Image 1 (cartoon, rainbow, N blue to C red):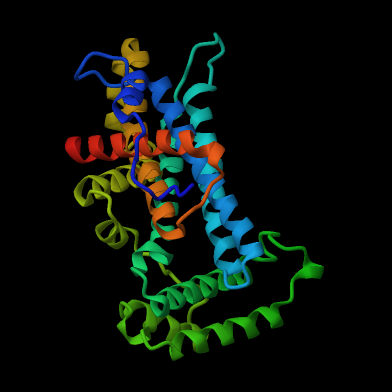
Image 2: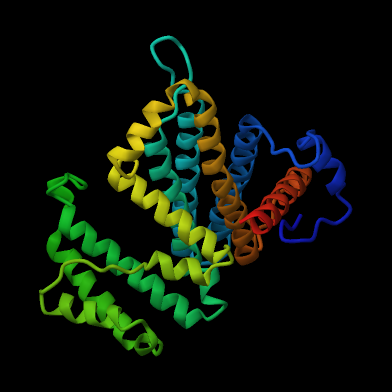
Length: 316
């Protein structure tokens, strides 16, 4: 079946009634929300695996692009699994549930960034193959610069397998490919400036992704997601913003359990919306064909995606 079809004859209302059996105006509990996050990202990974299988059989398919999409999605799925564990499996010495909001915010931020990287390389190019190849080449260039910079110092690659000369040759070739692309001069000026510095040895990295700009270009609600991204970044870098917030938190320690549940819900809500949009973006680009026995699961996930994206846009 084609996962990019409409909801067809699937009982959308009936499914949502079963999945959200609460009075009108009440939000789903955190356990149900985590089940939905797991369900959406699990099927997203299956779509990426299917892309790999198709690329292996189709001589016209790009294995490099299929592998890249799979890697981005696989990392997204792994981080989702870890986020779910942070929500459910951290216990104090007495066996009570605790919530590591700092780590959860860092993981949630990385989920948003992973989707935005995918969007920049694929859906964001809007079918312009030349522009897509330009960004993909820049992505490869950034990766090789990173490997040269940190490959041996951080033991990313064993010394016997690290050929800096070969990597620098690849970097030079990639720079030539980037500069010969007809869309090169339409890039944000910061990128050509960085390329020039890399060529002259004044810079050894390439900052390719401007996430705030990508948020504005993506289908996600700009104002809310920008504020959310800023919040998670600030929290990660300042351990909860300041000592003032810490004192307020400790003064309310008798309410920690209820407060943690509120914090969890506020965090899982945008993660669900980003995951729903990632799934929609993936099947829109890849036109994923899954086995017929997956049909009901696909309709269920599409229904959840529609529900959470609608809720996200209405309540942003």
